[in-house]
Length: 371
Length: 175
Image 1 (cartoon, each protein chain N blue to C red):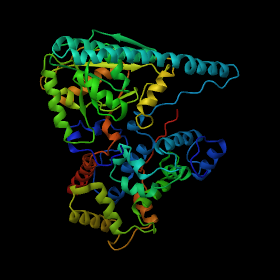
Image 2: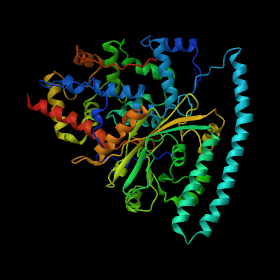
Image 3: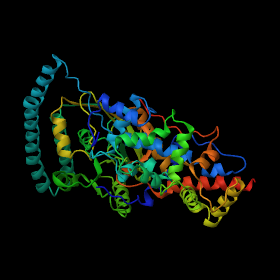
Image 4: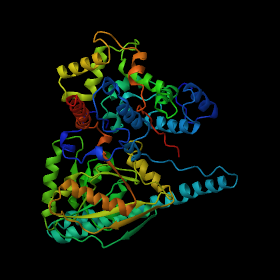
């Protein structure tokens, strides 16, 4: 997973200028005659570098704060132990049973429907959708999920996509419980991948592979085909492209915003008091993450279905993406950072360094001419 | 304080503070420790170049490669000592010293014309031709009274750079 190649130029050819977002307090516009000290004084650049070493907005997006231990007291500690016993010995087995029951019900209905109703497409699709919503409800119940949905429920119409901020793969389950979306996801290994290739396939889900650069064009085409088909399930996209810790949003990829259709934003915010739902894929596997959720008290979250947005005249896809990101961030109380989520997996493109070099070079040459 | 510890004791904080000449407060050292542990992903006791480069803001910096040579393999104590030049409490001389060290890549106490050109190259990239870089640098050196063949020492740097405008501070967030 630790690919060190610089991100392909496709990924950030027309990103908004990061310089606008980064602190540049120490860089004053130099003027006046060029002297030796101006050429030798690298303090602005060094300050930026040291500032990045001390703190940077990108790493903050993926930090999961460990909960403060509160069980250090003589009476709190037994209470906490009791809580652990209840969670692991009572709640967890109950939840496993609920989930197992759910899977039995689901699988025993799904396979007959899928294989026997091959003649009646419409009925089969409707039943499959209902069944997927059912199994997702079982999942949510297995974490004692308390989900509050606000706003009008998604409707099945062509030429619309749904976009949401991304904290963990459970976002998909929480949203799927209400509406059987077709989603675009990274293909995973293991049991998740098995589920992806069998059941989710029938919903019309689309897979991509982050590490393949050419993949983008193929995926873009599949997206466009899906959206324009009248019978397809509504498409859900997570434009951040990676899981973020539910306090920040990283830049939205423009793919979802140049399909020529309405974009319906969905904001998801988890309540951290009960459990931190952020899935730090570098630190834990999805199975561990699920087990962690199943041994916590509850997963509490709010889901807001926001007003559908269209591309405004004269707006580029990137501006559109930023506008929608703004809407979602404001609703869910998240801070925006100017970074591409894929920087988790690759280095920034040399374009940014070149921009800095260019502005330095231009300032030197300009002042040289003033002499 | 050899390999990374998960908990910083009062003794450790004082030892680190001593090592950086009290240029950071104890609170700031605690914050820096949290940051060090965050960057040092597998708790080896030092931050590898790769881990530094995983901070996009740092990777984008034109001088990142030079700085990596200076920060490679530093344990926490030396990490804080390295950053101490950027403290608001550091003197101008200490700041100029670290600037000198960035130029003096072979650490022999002398900064040659070649060193100066290399740093200029990092800063300006392909946007100034090699020939122009050499011309500008030679001209400015001459105007300041230095010969192209002579190398600059720390005292020369202090003479050239010491002026009111030299500001090189980083604020350590203290929560």
